Amino acid sequence: KNQVEQSPQSLIILEGKNCTLQCNYTVSPFSNLRWYKQDTGRGPVSLTIMTFSENTKSNGRYTATLDADTKQSSLHITASQLSDSASYICVVSGSGTYKYIFGTGTRLKVLA
Amino acid sequence: GAGVSQSPSNKVTEKGKDVELRCDPISGHTALYWYRQSLGQGLEFLIYFQGNSAPDKSGLPSDRFSAERTGGSVSTLTIQRTQQEDSAVYLCASTRLAGDRYEQYFGPGTRLTVT
Image (cartoon, rainbow over all chains, first blue to last red; front, top):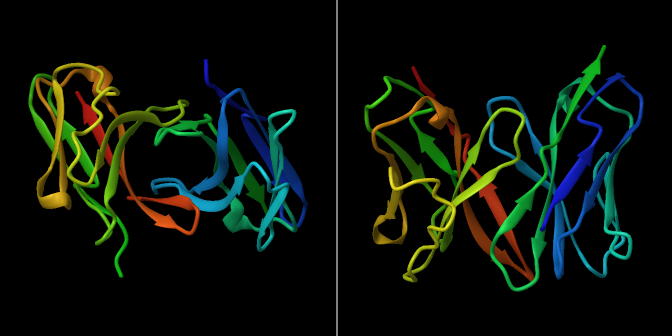
């Protein structure tokens, strides 16, 4: 069964600190992996998209990595800000399909 | 231009009533998805529209759910005889091809509460 699992479920960090969120997937064959940020009461917004051949992708203070061999991805947030408080969702798309498999997200809270 | 918009933003309805949720996708985007997001759950696929092709309705949880997309643009998700388990946030997303990959743009969602 195609699945996407994220850890931790929730995380609290102090402003200015770094953090790393994990995503493991079993989707096969694999096409691409996306990380989304979802603020409370808003729709998800794309942060990064990576295909099989891409190991890392950055978007400002967000850096995503992908290991397609172990089917793992991480999202690293550098120098966190209060505005980073949100849910971060890992989404995997299989090859030859228009459907996306969504993880349940990691809820991040950044404290002043 | 404007992003994906959804209306209403919040809807409270009594059990057994019908509700209609609306999605206005980004102009020119040919694909449109509806998802349901329940508390603590990942987004659940409901239905997919692509151009003039027959929609993929395989994610609709029961025959009380239906959706249509008129003129390849605006879409409406209808839930008949609502039940309390239908309470969730309903998200719409439109998709465009950017280079070698598809990019999804989500609306803000409609929070449905069935009392």
